[in-house]
Structures are given as C-alpha cells and as structure tokens.
Length: 156
Ligand SMILES: [Zn+2]
Image (cartoon, rainbow, N blue to C red; front, side, top):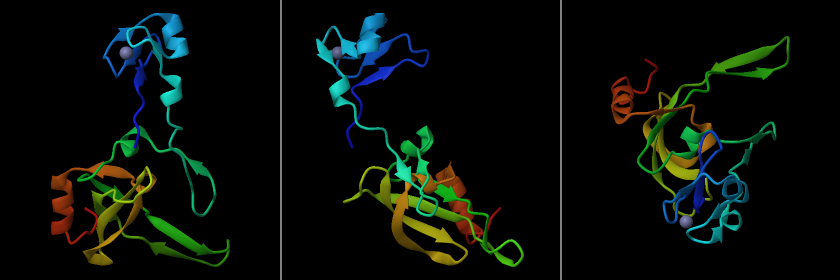
C-alpha cells in the first residue's frame, strides 16, 4: 500500500515533506503541495482516499483513522448487537455474538482487507476469514483479547 509523501498540519498552515522531513509554512507550498528542498510536487504521488461500499445497502463507507491504522498482529472486536429479519409486524431478532479477532496476514489482499482469525461464542475454536477494516467496531489490546478468551468469547 503506497503512503502519501507529505502531511498537512491539522490547522492547514504547514506541509511536512515525508521524503526529506522538511516542514514549510509557505502558503503557496501548502496550497500546491510543493517541497522547496526536494523541488518536487507531491500531488501526483497521492493515492485515492480509501473507500468501500456497504455490501447490503450499497452506501459508501470511509474508514476512520484508527481503522486505517489496523495492521498485522492487531486485535479488534466487532459488535453487531442485534439483527432483525422480517417486516414491521412480524420480525425475528437475532442476538449476534461479539466477534473477537486478530489480524494475521495481508497476503494477496487489496488495501483495507486482511486475513484474520476470529472467535465468538458460536465459533469458540476460531476461524480464519477475510476481514475489512470497516467491520471493526473497536480495537482492543492483547489483554482484552485474552480476557475474552477466558470468558469463552462471551461479552463482559
Ligand atoms: Zn522534501
């Protein structure tokens, strides 16, 4: 996955070149994404922002920064809470168990997708599957993951 070659400061007044680590406060450098030291425009190197499409609704979904930062070895959980099936008058709700997972690999995965090993009360021995970073509702620590394992993957 290619990384941007520059960072704009949070207030938008400065540009940090990640190639030479020089920060410029020159407004035209910021506007034009230019590094005076490298004598290079960054714009051409910018990857498209990561975006996905919801499988059911078709809505575009943009991952949060913490989801974008998820990487191999990280732990996460997915809280699906309740799903309803049926119409307004007659519907059945299903309590979907919380899924706890660890990211294992990105082999042959497009950006934002990983191979994971995921566990739940329905699947206590774990299952390898494909995972999109937008599915995670929270990143958790190794301790939280091990505590969930001791609860046999039930919610706290
Ligand atoms: Zn530079």
